[in-house]
Length: 296
Image (cartoon, rainbow, N blue to C red; front, side):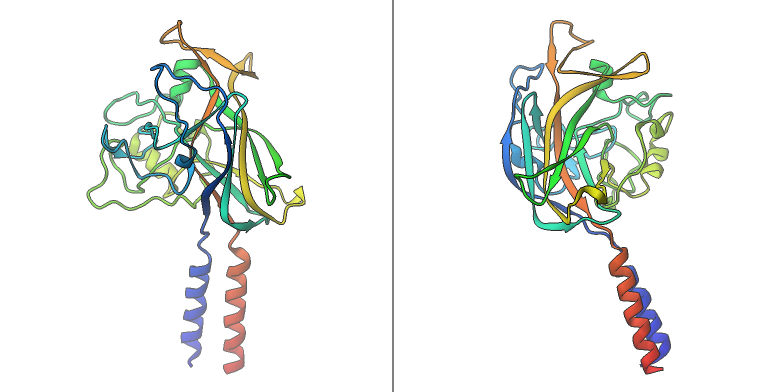
C-alpha cells in the first residue's frame, strides 16, 4: 500500500468521523401538559409525540404547505407540543450521548420571525418574533438533562427565541427550492436573535450557513454527568424586558385582543443532542498515520 493512498485514507477518515451526528428524542418518558390556552379556544397542542424525531422540513401539509423557514415556522398541532404552566415534558434518546467539552442540546420550537416585507422575506431593523409582537414577550422554560430520569440536572431558565430552517439553499421563505438541499439539524447555530436584525432573506440563509437553526445550549462538563439520555422541560414563563432588566410572567394580555390573556407555554418541535466528534477524528487520523509509518 502506498504512502499516498494511506494519507488519502487518513484524510477521508478524518472527514467522515468529523461529522457530528446528533441523537434526536425517540420516545416520551413523561408528559404533564399543565395549563395551556389558545385564542381559537380549540387548539390544545397536546400530542407529546410531536416532539419526537427531526423537525419536518415541509410544514402545514394539508392546510398551508410550505418549507420550514425562519419566517415560516411550524403551526399545526401535529408539528409541536405545548408545555404549559405547571406542566413538564421529559423525552428520551434511544442511546445515551457522552458528555464532553462540546456536548450541546438543540431545541427546535415554533419560533418565527416577522416578515416586514411580505412575501419577499425580510426582517426589520430589530428582529421580532411573533410572540414579541403579540405579547411583548418571549418564551422561556427550564431545561433539564440526565442519564437517569429521576436525577435530572437543571441547566437553568433558557430563552427559546431562535427559528428553524429546513433547506440550506432556500431563496424564498414560502416556497421550497426546485432542487432542495437539506439544512443540517445537527449543526449548532451559534447566533442570537439580534444577528437577524435588518437581514434580507438571502442574508438570513447566509447567517444560518447550512444549519437548521434552533436554540443550542451547552452542557457543562462539571455537572458530574457522564452521559445524557433524558431531556426535560418545565416551568414555562413569558420573558419581558422592563427597564433593561428581565422580568418573568405566567400570563400576558394580547396586544391584538385585550380580551384574551394567554398562559405561558413552550412549543416544542424537536430536541437533539450533539456529541463532540474531535476525539474520534484524532483517533482515526493518528491510527492511520501510525500504520503508514509501519509500512513505510
